[in-house]
Image 1 (cartoon, rainbow, N blue to C red):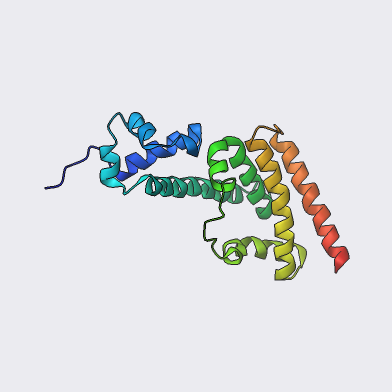
Image 2: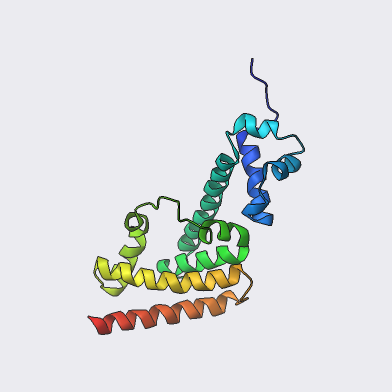
Amino acid sequence: MPPKFKFTREEIRDAAFNITRQGGFPALTARSLAAKLGCSVKPIFGLFRNMEEVGQEVLSAANALYQSYIEKDMAEGKYPPYKASGMAYIRFAREEKELFKLLFMRDRSGEKIADEMEEIRPLLEIIQKNTGLSEEKAYLFHLEMWLYVHGIATMIATSYLDWDMEFVSRALTDGYMGLKRAMELKE
């Protein structure tokens, strides 16, 4: 009969998530996880094949938290939906610096990237509705706004900037309006 472990996969994942949230992904090791749980590494490797599998669980949990930011901000109605997605991204960078770095600032050269067009289709539809741009131009619009939003978020996540969200909101509006005008002139 296999041994019974006193932890579930979810408890181990949650502990790993909290280590990452506080100290960044490099802080997550079998030893640090065992210390957080107050046990040896045996229960960890009884429920997970290796630390890479634990890391994948942390990535999934971080992404679920990020998605909840997007959903909340878009449903709240404080900002138009497309702007709300950018504001949520930046708020996530401010409030969850280490998780933001894990999701959006790690080396992804060895990863298979999902079909981006399908992933962002709801945003493209919003852009098309608000600007009258074709899908192709809406995609280019989104890429340029993404560079702007990601730049602000990265500077906030790395504590290079400490802009308040009111200023961020104004900056995003200015960027959006300027890009919209530039796209209209190209038509």
